[in-house]
Structures are given as structure tokens and as C-alpha cells.
Amino acid sequence: MKFLILLIGLMFFCAPVEAKFQVEAPSPTTEFHKMSYAPVYPTYSWEPVLGAEFYQVQVVNERGKIVSELLNDESLSRVTDWWAFTEAGKYYWRVRVVDEHNKPISAWSEKSFFEVTTPVTFAALGDSITHGGAAFIPAGQISCQWETFCDFPVKNIGRSGDITELMIERFENDVLPFAPKVLIIMGGVNDIRAGLAADEIISNLKTLREKCKANQIEAVFCTLTPINEKILRGKGIYLTDKDWRAEMEKVNAWILENGGVDVSSRLSDFDGELSETLTHDGLHPDLRGKMFIGKAIQNFLSEHYFNFIFGPEVW
Image (cartoon, rainbow, N blue to C red; front, side, top):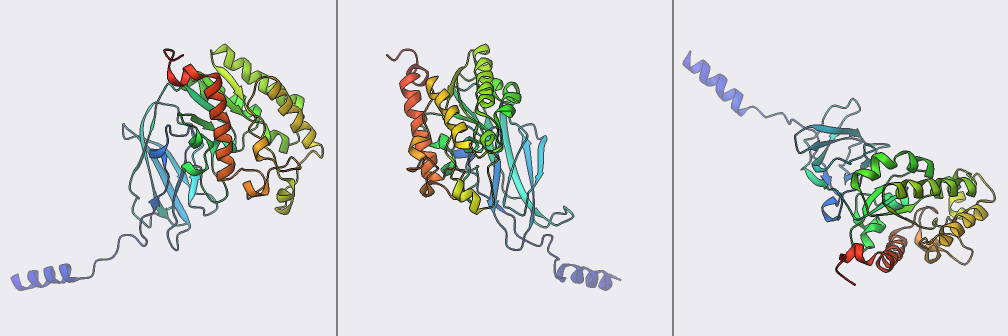
């Protein structure tokens, strides 16, 4: 009997152990730890795992509660969280590979931490050009956020795809929790793409200005960044309004007349379109373009809001 038990034990311990997971865990590539503030709408990214197609992301707060669970889109090694992170606290996110039935086939990645802090001095409300990302670089990396190129912290409240009406709708939820002293507003490019008239865009910008005024926030508008229609057409994307240039110029004229920041001149070619050397898709400025935007905003804020940056004791 003892011999039989020993034999069974040897068979158990010597038998090959079946691997629990089929592929290795992904490696996160986000750079939230290098940013002054985490974005309100984080984009999580990771190194793709060979042979993997589906990924699951999980976000956990400091109390151990899962606040967000996401699946990647279109087999990309990134996903944007459309749940606004406005509650102060510490969070971490992690990712694992899953199969088409959402069954895990890898372990979780290491944890990547980020923190939400309030209040802030400067914040930026906008669309994808503010949110970040360009070409194949995801928004969670610092090289494609114009905020990176300011010498002082700017809270990123951009959300890809927004038109100015949506910025108005999320003002209370996304902006007010951070109580910024100055709100940089860069919106209207998606409105132009959708064929909205300049007067409607300007009306929306005025509404945002009034909301800022009602909450003791200084509103700073930035000109609409140019578009390269030739590149867009090459990708099968056509603008709705054939007179879009005139509408964009009208919006930009209003912004400059009201003391806004010119971020578009440095991005434009001789025809007034987004320079081919600064974009891959005809719409989003790439690394150098983001740098031009960031430096233009930094220079403006340094000149007009010196005391907000260095303190009221500095003259």
C-alpha cells in the first residue's frame, strides 16, 4: 500500500505541468508617470504580444475598486478610456491578453500607476489635438501631447472627436472639478469637418467663455489648426462644406480679435493648409507640430499670466 502511494506521488510530481497561460503578459508603454498631470481621458497602450489579437484593460482605484474595464478596439495595442477621471486619488491600470470569448490567455501585466490631483492652475479643453496622439504614437505618451512642450503644468481635458457643443456639455463634469484659474480652449476643427457654420462655432465658443466667467476662470482661445485637404482626400475623407476655409478663417479672426493665441500660423504652408511636413493624416499635427503649439501657448501664458505661473509675489 505504501509503495502504491509512493508511486502515485512520484507520477504526480514528475508529470509535466500544463502551462496556465498560452502567451506572455503585455508590457505597458504609457508615460503617465512622466506627465505633470494624468489626462482626464487616459489612453492605455502596451507592446503588442505576438499572435495576440484581443486585450482586456482593468483600472483600479486606491480602495481596490475596479472603476473601469475595457476591451481593445480593432486589434490595436491601445484603448482610450471614455470614463472621465475627475475624482482625486491614486489609480493603477493593467492589461492582459484574452481570446475572442474574453477568456484570459495571459497573466496580467505589471501595474502602471497614475494620480488625479486637484486643483490645477492651467487646464486645456479640446478635441484630439489637445487629447494627444499622432500617426502611430498613442495619446498616453508624452511625445505627442502639446502640453509636454509647455514649461509649466497644463491639465489635459481633451477628448478625441469632440465638437464645441460636446465641450459645452461636459464643462461642469470635466472642467469644474479641477477649478483651473485659466482654461485653454482649442475647439472647432471637428465642427468645420462636419460642415458647421462659423457663426454657430463662434456662438458655442462664446457660451464656453460665459461658463468660464461664471466660475471665475480665465478663458484663453486658440486658433483652429489648419487642415490638409489633399492628404485627407487621399485617404478617402472629404469635407462636408466646400467653403470650409472661409468658415475656418472667420472663426480664427474672431478668436484673434478677442485676444486668443495664434497656434496655426506656424503649422501652415504657403496655401494656408496644414504642412505636409507636420502631419501624416492631414488633420493631426505630429511631433514638431505639437511642439509649435505648446511653445506658442507657453509664450502667451508667460506673457499674460505671469503671476499665475510664478506667484503673486513676483513682479
